[in-house]
Length: 160
Image (cartoon, rainbow, N blue to C red):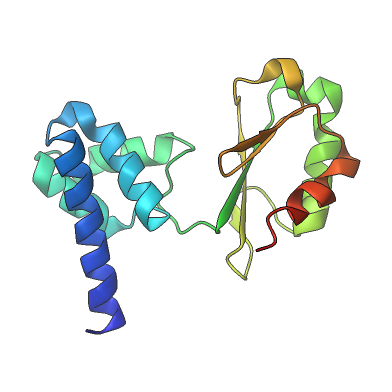
């Protein structure tokens, strides 16, 4: 089987599994998209097309949902996704310095993925952890009360 066929089959399997788990109701769109995104690392257009067909929903509606939520992506992301909270509470307690340290260390701007596919750096308006700002979430790990000096050591934890 060619790599293209393997990737296509992986995509179809991911869509099928998510729909089997959640059902084919439009009410389950976000859980379905989340599962497929988690499995594939992003939502390729072919996956959106397949979900559209199975849910009998317009592809444009799926794309709107997929592009609205920061947890979903229509572009490939790195192995580790870093979400930086840029809300006012994080900003006033040192967020600007933490953001600069992330950019300097990774050599990335918001929305970019490293050439080696290891990191994706994104900003979000709020992570809901305002009491411990500045906050960064890497994959499923939250780090609060950050300083710029802590960033290199935190990133080092993800060298695998």
